[in-house]
Amino acid sequence: MFKELHPTIRVRIFISFLSKIIGASVFPFMAIYFSNHLNAPLAGALLIINTTIQIIASFFGGYLADNIGRRRLQVVGEWIKFLTLVGMAIVNSNLVGSVGLTFVMLLIMSVAQGAILPATDAMLIDVSTPETRAYMYSINYWGSNLAMMIGIILGGWLFQEYMFNLLLFLASLSLVTAILTTVMITETLPLNNHEIKIKNKTNLKNLIIGYKDVLSDYRFLLYILGGIMLMSIEFQRDNYISVRLVQEFTSPPFLDNINIPISGIRLLSILTVLNMILIVILSPIISSFTKNNLSLKKMYTGFILFAIGYAVCSFANDIFVLFIATTILSIGELIYVPIRQSILSEIIDKNKRGAYMAVNGMVIHFGKLVASSCLLVSPFINKYMMGVLIFIFGLISIIFTEVSIKKFTRKKSNTVIEKLYDRESEKIT
Image 1 (cartoon, helix red, strand yellow):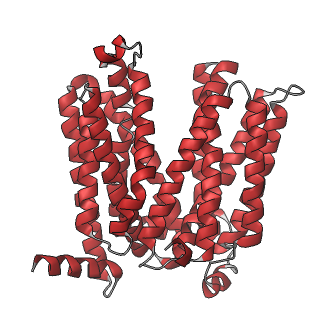
Image 2 (spheres, helix red, strand yellow; image 1 turned 90 degrees about the vertical axis):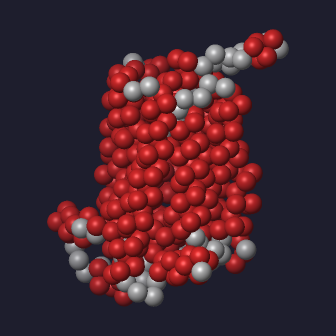
Image 3 (cartoon, helix red, strand yellow; image 1 turned 135 degrees about the vertical axis):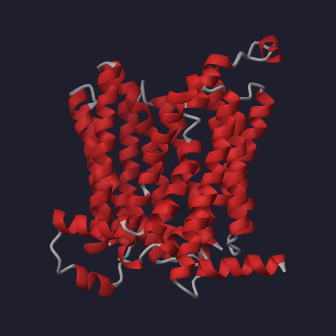
């Protein structure tokens, strides 16, 4: 099945795999780096600046992807990432050792990464078909989780003591991605779309006009709200669940007896790794049920399992219950992600895929914001109420998604999504 995918998809998935390894080896550990060299508040401020700049770059990247092409943006961005990793290695060598220059390099790399992502997402949609998208997203999701696991292991072992060597290795991986992008990636922006838009000036006014159309698409925005609810559930692990486990969890006696005590923070890391391992192992099995058969019922079942798993993690302290809950949420995640991504590709304007995918990228940031808000209200509700709230988020995500899809099918006929409803009704009758 993988060989049947468009060559650009196969290459792009491999490039994304290497890029995820690079990102997971660096970005999660920069807070520690800046805290050690400066202080925690300043480290937080620098990372906020970095994230904000990346968001802005993503909006520009989405606009440019629809106007100058997907490939050109990716080629420039990948080479910039390579050069900044080389620069970061140099400024962290024994000859230089500059924290300020490290931040500058990190900022430039974040700008490049932010600009690339919408073009990458749009390109995958350009060269895929409705029949192959669920499988494509399953493979891409599997690769992303495997890459992140590899990256976190590399960074965890090497970042602090062997940062220079690690950065040189990551720069070599980045060189491979830059060469592959330059040599093997072809332009996928439709020629008629490109010829019309290339005449327009790329300026702030046109950028705002372009995103005005996207933000006025209420069907798309409802779909995005459903995604934000899902992401707010996932980021509970980094917010409420992590804080609660640190405060409440005590190592079970049977582990103490064999001298393997586990603290709340260690358990959190174990659950995170377990989630990644389950996704890597179960992905081929789950994808076999979704690759050629998009189903709204399956997607909503995934939403529910995902919400139930995180809801249980919000109040349970038994290690085995937490393992079972993590397994349940991982299965739900594997079911809904490829289907939801496939449907997303159907409801966006094909002439503005870059802009739409840039806005879709905001789901993660707003999801973090909602999850952080839950942490703020947590002192006023008990952990069981928080579990109910997380489950309600899952139900809300279903409502927003369902309303969005129904409004889409009312406006356009003979679409892939409309066939989903026909398929569901056939099963009922």
